[in-house]
Amino acid sequence: MPVTHRDIETAAAALAGQVVRTPTIASPRLSELFGMPLFFKLENLQFTGSFKDRGACNKLLQVRAGNQAPNGVVAASAGNHAQGVAYHARRLGIAATIVMPQTTPFSKAERTEALGATVVLHGESLSEAYQRAQELVQERQLLFIHPYDDDAVIAGQGTAAVEMLQDQPELDVLVVPIGGGGLIAGMATWARHVRPRLRILGVQTEFCPSMVAAVRNQPAPSLRTHTLADGIAVKQPGERTRAIIGKLVDDFVLVDETAIEHAVQVLVTQQKTVTEGAGAAAFAAVMANPTRFHGQKVGVVLSGGNIDRRMLSTVLLRGLARDGKVARLRIEITDLPGTLSKVTRMIGATGADIIEIEHERLFSPLPPRQAELDVVLETRGKSHVDQILRDLHAAGFPARAF
Image (cartoon, rainbow, N blue to C red; front, side, top):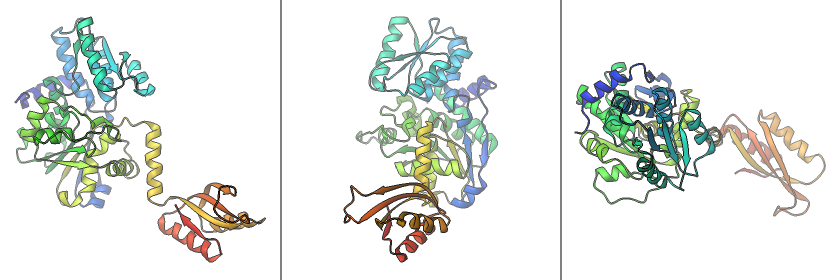
């Protein structure tokens, strides 16, 4: 195997005091809800918000010790790897260049620069950015830091399992997200050493199951990276990580977009923990398959928390709409003075709060003396919405939720 438990022991000693020793916490509320003891490894609490700090720091410590990059290092990333390399390179006195696609959101490029790296925007995709990074290796004599297919990076990521199994040595199942495979490869290497019978499950999205196909020697599926879990939407999984995963990981779970979105919502509202889509993917697998884990002590890695604020807002509001706590009604009224105030008084009397209202006369299929109201409400839930609809119908105002 390219990485052994001794490599991870060495990495754990090297990283002590260099990265956050994140907690593994019990979740009594969600444990009761899903019928199993649940424990979360909070890698979203790392300084740059993801487990990538571990592998980047371990690799860069080795680079500095061996003076392997006198001219600096380069990486290609649009996300967490970029920030991990940038932050730890600056701390360790190593010049870092990060190549990011030109389509990278400005906030991510700005954050990476703020962490001390030189950002180069190149190409429309990560593969084009990767090619430019390889050119910079030759042009400037830089050392390339791979995001996952590197022994030192894999060993660094494996230190998450060292901490997790120190905190919860009696886990029955370990559930870990998979992108390029560095995290689960490192964690599985350590887990198999200290707990040979621990069950290890890897999680990918249905949109981009590249590692699952590679390990199972299946034809490459059609891969889509436009997913809420973009942090694990990796088209080209690692070769070194694939070898480890194929030998040490028991099985895989694929999760869809709805499950990932729901997991982000539940973690915020019930666990009070913010994760990105990729960071919530392992929990999404548990939520979508509770009977598979029933009664077992389940360790779930929340791998990162770098979700865009607008996306988080959208996800949470969609959750409120799905639960019926924000509802939109279309109400037919007679277009006469006083009708609108009558409808709003009726809705208010039920205890609902009107957020916005639109009075549609011109673009309605109804006769000229009638109109439609589109009303957005905050309610107590779906049963409350049903009550409002019944009251409106009884008062002669046909209405429906849409």
